[in-house]
Length: 483
Image (cartoon, rainbow, N blue to C red; front, side, top):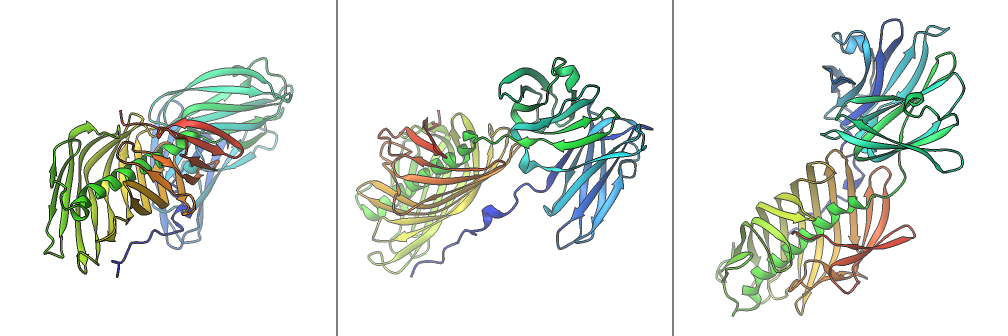
């Protein structure tokens, strides 16, 4: 009977990933002119608190803690109550962080220099899940004597040159203007100064290489404000598939490692040691049941293997068995020991364990597990969490794969990817000369804002490209290498 397998939680992708951080792009607290308050709602089933950071456009920073709010509770605080040392001055962004993801919050920003003496505008906090590299301000009204101002916040770790493109009702680009955004601070932009000749209603799209969020204030001729957050730009970002592709690439290395190890079991004439990239050292002890088959694949300080992939570090494997060598079942672990892989020149340093099991007679096997990679180049440096649940049929040197991949990204730009390979169209690897599938289709869904679904068809005949289809649009993409 097979060893008990770990089962991936099917609802994993439905859980919020980075709901623990929010940003209110702009609040203001200036004597006799502006006043702001913030509403915090704890929707969780236990008390929770928040760490708060206020950052002005000039970089001045103030921190505070919101004490635990009861489950289901609401707290409203003025800016002065939250940050006693902030005082009167320029506007600021408010960043909120919590161990709980069950929060909503909003800001009330009131203009005091009006006929009523208190003209409020309200907008909700933006979860980082809604940050994007392209955002749109869908409505910028125009009226003579009135004014509009947008606020942009660069969520990256370094300054960014973003581009503002203005579109009018004819759908044409009316104007384009670059703006430099410092990291993690607000940048207010008065439209009459940025686009002084704009005298019609318009929309603005912001293009950035880092994730951004934003708000827009529209003032009537009586200086009364309305407030709205920018929306994610509704296009697919295919760079979001890199996490899926590097997970598939790493899974192929595990398949090859399993194949290199079990060759001693299925081919008794295979050498126990091999000195190349990687160096393979296999120990086969048929008289044992625990650790009857162990191996280490060592890439050392780094080398590029025959599949064109660069790795460093090692993969260690150990299997135990139930039953005989001629009619038994084996199960064990594939452990990453400071394992490094590259994809399209981005580096991933992997730590984790994958469970593996299979027959002691057949070359077919299963892989189920997860790993975490410290990554560079994922929009900004961050972490990639990956999980696989794969069934592999190995025949005549080919690896036929079906199952599921899941990845989640935590960086300046955050998202999840879920992918499945149906048994009716499995992906097929020929790991004797290529680290990518030669046929088969992967269906995927990207959980970002906006999310999108699509497929990758590897039956291009060259083992270096795939046909990417999103909606009714298809294109051939080149698969990354480790060089």
